[in-house]
Amino acid sequence: MPKISAFYGIIIYMYFNDHAPPHFHAKYNQFEALIEISGLSIIAGDLPSRALGIVIEWASLHREELAANWVRAQNHEPLTQILPL
Image (cartoon, rainbow, N blue to C red):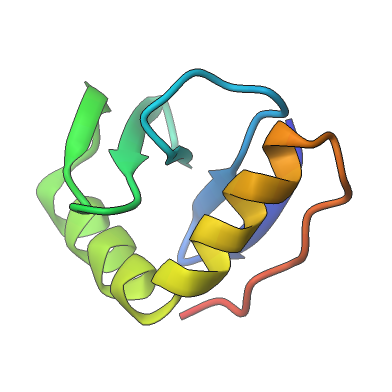
């Protein structure tokens, strides 16, 4: 599970060949959520509200990069790092 970014104690991951819809994983302490790239909504898991707000802010700035990484992950290609917030 490649780490593609980290900020404020939050780590962003993407799995290779993961299931649809296109999403990324955000981990913060013992919490983890799967966030859909297109709508930036939680599709599974949970994050504290403050951490979720930070993740959504970051993802809204990097949606195109996240979508490009999703395609790379599906093709088992190296993922690019995305700048932190």
